[in-house]
Length: 199
Image (cartoon, rainbow, N blue to C red; front, side, top):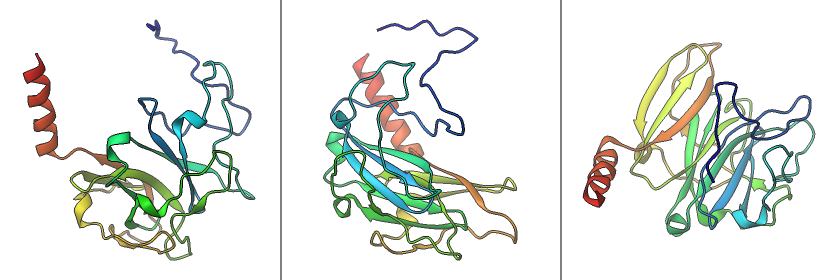
């Protein structure tokens, strides 16, 4: 359906006081959804477990949060990627790791999930969680504006309950605020050629 979005914007979701929108992703109806929390929990559930609701609603519960935990990240795994995808986690103090998707059981939405990163004073809290196949690149941005670009392949694979390894060295007082997975140049060229061939 066509929606006319004006300069004033469009309500996508109703938020209660103290709540905020973390991420939006396009899905195909058969994907798995993973929500990651600041304290290192994650829940994986099938997309069709979240029923359709109107734009001006609060939606449905994705993960049951403990204490003062909050959702910080969203990953979507397409049907074709479920067999070989990994989840890449990045923490405030520059730690990161990849973990095989098979270590994340598919649950019903609204549960407490499972650990995805062992959060300690050394690692800091979870900042980002993304679905990767290993060929992508990773951009990591710090609070003081330092940006690194590295390959996803260079980030080691560890189990869910591990801390991972340092992927970004930070000055004292600085911390990671964002981690984004993006297609590598070669992948972008391949996508462009495929679209060109389709006319």
